[in-house]
Image (cartoon, helix red, strand yellow):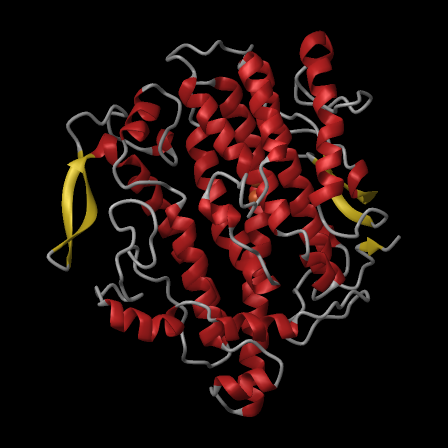
Length: 461
Ligand SMILES: [Fe+2]
Ligand SMILES: [Fe+2]
C-alpha cells in the first residue's frame, strides 16, 4: 500500500488502476492542471532542471528521492499514508467534508499563483530551488484534494475540482476563497513570512483533519504534513538568515539607525517587525470566527479534531466545557467564557499562536547571539483582524484599543508602508550563480540533502 507506482500516468499508492472510472476522470483533469501550471505557475521556469525531492514511498524511512527534473515533468500524484482497508464515511451528509476539501484545496494553487514572480528575484540558487520545491508540493497538495473530491463526492466533486483551477489569487471576479490567499507575495521577505506563518496555518488545519473520522482524508493530510514541514523550515531559516545579515551590518557600522542599515543594503529590524505584524495578523484570521457553530458540528461529527486530539486527556466530547474568547466592551478588551464546542476555531488559533511564538523566540536568539538588543514580538491577537468578533477593531500591536486618529497616525509604525515595500523591492535583484547570495541575506549553514551550499541546485534551460 505504501510504495508508489510510477509506471502509471498518475503516480499513486491507492491502486488507481483498479478504478477505471476514477482513473479516467483524473486523467481528464491532469491536462487542465498542466495548463494551469504553465499559465500561472512559476514564471519563465519551463526549461529549468531543478534539484527536487519526489516522494517514492510514504514510509518515514525512505519517502524522498532527489534529482534534477523539469518542474512540469514532476511526478505529481496521489499518496495516502497507509491505513486499514478504506473505511466508509460513517456520519453526516458529507457537506462538511466537501466544504473543507474545497477550502483547503483552494489554498494550494493560490500560493503557487501568489509566488509565481519570485523566481525572477531569487537571492540565491539555493533559495530558488526551495521556492520551486514548495511550488511543486503545493501543486501536489492540490492533487490530493482533487483525488478526494473525485473519489468521494461524485459529480459535485468533479465540478469543484474544475473550479479549483478557475479561481485565481487576487482575481477581481473570481478570487481565491480566503483573504490571505488573495494578498500579494511581492518580495522574498514576504515569502519567508508567508511560509513561516501561513504554511503553518496549513500545518494546523491539516493536523486537525489528520484526526478526521473520514479515513481517506486523515491519511491524505498526514502525508501532506510531512511536506509542509519543509515549507515552514524555508520560512523560519529564511528570516533567521535575514536577521543574521542585518545584525552583521548593524555591528559593522555600530548603528541601529534604520536609514544607515538600509543604505548598507540590509533590511532594518523595524521593517522585519512590520512584515511580521502583517503576515501574523492575516494568518490568524484564517482560523475563522472565534465562535462558530460549524466548528462545533465539524468536531462533533468527527470531521475535524483539535490539534493533537489524541494526546489530550479530556473526554473528547467537550459538552458543557467552556473556553475564553475576546470581545470589546465599552472600548475595552474583555474575556468571556463560551461553550468550547463553539470556540474550536479559537482553540486551534491559540495552538497556532503558541507554535508561532516559539519560532519567533528562535529568531530572537539570532539577534541575542549577535549582541543586538532589539527583539521581534508577535502582535496582540486582536491586532489588525478582519474576521470574527475582533474584526475592524483599531488596536495597537501591544493590545491597546486606539481611536481612528491614532490608528491613522501610527499605522505606518505597525504595518508595512508603501516605502517599506519599495525599499524591500529595491533589494530584490536576481542572484543565481552557485554559492552566491544577495547582500541582504546570509547564506544557509547547510545545503539541501547534504549537498554543498554552492551546489548547482538549478540548471537553467
Ligand atoms: Fe500545501
Ligand atoms: Fe505549504
